[in-house]
Length: 353
Image 1 (cartoon, one colour):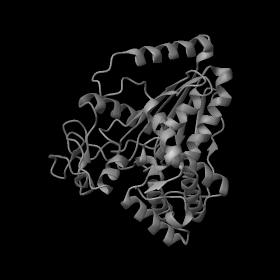
Image 2 (cartoon, rainbow, N blue to C red):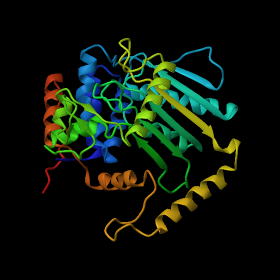
Image 3 (tube, rainbow, N blue to C red):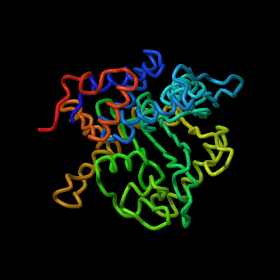
């Protein structure tokens, strides 16, 4: 099934309002989710509405809550209390506050506590880069990942994202990845499509390598990327983000099940001319584009962030794909909430030819 962006936003916003979010907050979260779908990251797209609804039902997310900046910190240190609101709202307030602080401090850090799932972490560093800042983020998460050499779930997917300002008319350079070998959401997408996954991503419950995504959900665990290297990064993010935010390490019995998140903003203009910096980034992009392709069929080299922008342009033109299992789950949720289903709400949605 192909869904247009406008209709997906309307559908998602409608469900979020039914869950108890204000119209303004529902629109913010809906747009964030759909942006992930548009960029080819359905793991963080509108399929997330199903677990979000479960978290609201379980009392883990307060759909009417509004995050707040904790007073009394130094100018360059921001603490945001998410108050268990939707995580996109908490991260958005962190970005807004950093933009207010950085002109006076050149560098500022925001720590997000009581923060629920923020969606695609790259969204927030990209927002900083679009304002002439270097944006850096990392977070811990609920335990789904085995430590290097072990099989028990002790770490989260613990993502990190970086973005740098680029030319005004070009795709921002954005690096955004989990320290696990794959994000859990991508595993769920593969499971929903009935697909296997490459080796090196998942262990089954007995600690054996598996290519069946269902084995993860049957008591297995994810692996870190890059063997011990990804594991080292995951540990660093778990401890720094988890402890600074009071979330706790994911392996600690006292872990509070939220997503400790750190956002850092660096004012490029405090160190070098911003225009020169942007020009140098574009010169780097040009060198990458001019490099010889590895194979004739690869299409050549791209800088981080460009594949997502290419996918976004196509999805805005043609719509984006919703897996059948995801569509069924969303329609079931809509029925439960007394809202129109995806088909009924989006008459322009269409089946694949």
